[in-house]
Amino acid sequence: MDDLPEIHVLRMGHRIFRDQRISSHVALVARAHGASSVIFSGQYDERLIHSVQEVVANWGGPFSVSYAKDWKQKIRELKEQNFFVLISTMYGVNLLEAIAEIRKAAETRDLLIVVGSEKVPPDVYELGDVNVAVTNQPSSEVAVLAIMLDWIFGGAELSKEFKDARLKIIPQEKGKNVIKIR
Amino acid sequence: MDDLPEIHVLRMGHRIFRDQRISSHVALVARAHGASSVIFSGQYDERLIHSVQEVVANWGGPFSVSYAKDWKQKIRELKEQNFFVLISTMYGVNLLEAIAEIRKAAETRDLLIVVGSEKVPPDVYELGDVNVAVTNQPSSEVAVLAIMLDWIFGGAELSKEFKDARLKIIPQEKGKNVIKIR
Image (cartoon, rainbow over all chains, first blue to last red):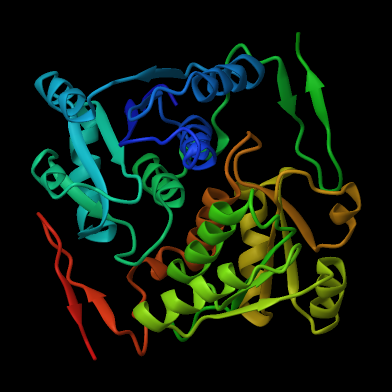
């Protein structure tokens, strides 16, 4: 994966009780599907952050997790650092239309994928470089993130090797085989 | 999408309170990403089923939702009807290895994709035709389902047109445009 673009994922908003599992799935998908980090915003949720760190400790990285109190500010900051900012929204341009531009940007720039929670404030559409819908249908931000990563990486992320893992799955036709590496 | 395979999605287990959002995301993804139906199991959740029907009424179909009290029984039943059964599990054969066999099966047979909740009983691995992992890493069943559908349909599902919708999104570079069709 060394030639592949660096992609970071920002989760807009988080409510500690209601969003716990979805935010956790966003982080799991970001890591498993080849992104370099997840940035949470909304309510600060120590347990959520800790759970992501545990996954990295057990299953490897590199993958980092951080928190930004103000996600709009964070987007502006990363844009100033020349990140190409992709806003995930069901109202945006279809991925099939947008993918060429995204891949081209990814050749020279780091990417930020911004994924929403239920309600996205309308002014977010002005913040990104491109507003992208995976299907223009009600779907799941978790699924949409995975599909975007898969299309940008071209499937290479599906066989990514993780470093410094304690645990590793040996794929099986039937049953489970998890080995302890250290 | 008329030449594409029929794919049905079975959700193993459901706990009304804890799994509501994830089960709902599984159904949204099944529909938006081209499957023909979702079959829920576990606790019977009328609100969940109703919410999926509402999405179909508003955004179109065809897409059906049903409930099976005993998901193992349901898998056996569909196998007898010659369905090719794909069990989604992080311990299985990597999708990149399995995809050719799945696509081949899909040429002549309907597919059932079985997605888990947290704990999957080990005997499920004996029930399917193939046990498939998208990344062999902890991920999200919602994301994994979307990636499987995308690989099987080869991206054609991303521009699927839905029938009998009341609402339709006109993709926008900035902002929202939802039209009422009827």
